[in-house]
Every structure is written in structure tokens, then in C-alpha cells.
Image (tube, rainbow, N blue to C red; front, top):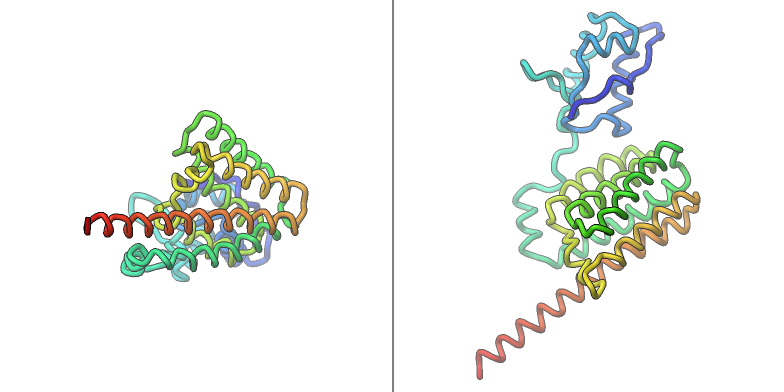
Length: 259
């Protein structure tokens, strides 16, 4: 993913290279620049920051030495893989074989998303709220036309945007890895949750997202915390209902085998 030059600001510090490094480090720390993002060219950065290209080149070399960026010949400069996977492939397979571990995942998400939602209600800027509004509109539109693929994509981006709006850098990076696993449907099958609506429409999920969204828009941390908790509690209840149904079906099949 290429990054627009508009995120950079002119540099007027005494130490030009230090100032360039500090600004790019800040963008990475705050999750503006993320793993795999492509940086603009040296020329674009130098023009935006109003510094010489040799200074930009020196700063990028230092960032590369720090392991924060990588240069690929003929392709450009990219933010290095800093977070990686929350779990190794072997551990992911282990989780898939032991579905009870899903409850631990939900327990973790419940606490982190309550915290993130409350912080977002306190800290979200006008731009953060505009981003959330755009994604909420996408969720509404996808729901209306029954586009479950678009709805699932917007769902994940909605939660990412809330974490971003918390402006807590540790949350931003740690949850980014968790949501990457969510995209793989390892822990979260939205189709199963839609089925709990009775008609499979996903209306209950949409209502939960509306509640979280509105609490953040209203700058109400406690209501945002509660809405986030209610959402994960719904996921947990749905999961347990499915598990119990599957267990009963297995028992019924064994009984049938004896007849």
C-alpha cells in the first residue's frame, strides 16, 4: 500500500536528520504507517518536508539500521514487518483443534475492546469520528443490500478504527495482529453470528455496532464500554449455543448408531 506525501510536515529543527527520523518514527509508533506500507520516494519526502534529498537518504538509512523500514531494489522503501503474527502457524493450528480456546480469545478481546471503546469516546478527534462514520455507513449499506462479504470487511475495519481512535499506541499495534487473525476467520465466523438473528440478516450485529458507534460519537466512555462488552458477550453466547448444539448432535448420532 502506497502512502501519500500529505502525512509529512516541513522540518525546521536544528538537526535535520534527527527531525526526519523522529517524524517517521512517530508515524510508525502511532500506527499511521503500518507493516508493509510503502513510503513515498526520497524526492517526494524531501519536497514535503522542505529538506534536501541527501538528508532524507541519511534519515532513511538510519531507520533501516533500526530495523523499522526495508528497501527493496526496484520497488521502493517499506515499513518493516514489526508486529508479525500474534501466533505461530503451529499455535494457530493448535487453537483450531481445541475450540475451547476461543473463549480465551473472547475474554482478551472483551477487555481490550471495552478499554479501546472507552478511550475512543474520550479521545476521538473530528477526523477519527469521520472515519468511523464512513465505515458505519458502509456497514449500513452492506446490510441493506445483503452483501455479507462487504459487511464482514467493514466490521473488522470498524473495530480497527475504534482502536486507532483510542490513540493508545500499544493497543493500536497489539490489536492489529489480533484483527489480522480475525480476517482469517480463525476465531470469528460472522455467518454463525448472523444465524443467531433468527432470519440470518445480521440485524442484531448491526444494532450492536450502532450502539458502540453512537456512544463514541456522543463522547460517552461508560456507554461505549458497555456497548463493546455487550457485543463480545453476544459473540460468546452465540458460540456456546453452537457448541452445545454440536455436542447434542454428536450424542444423538452415537445413539442412532446403536439402533
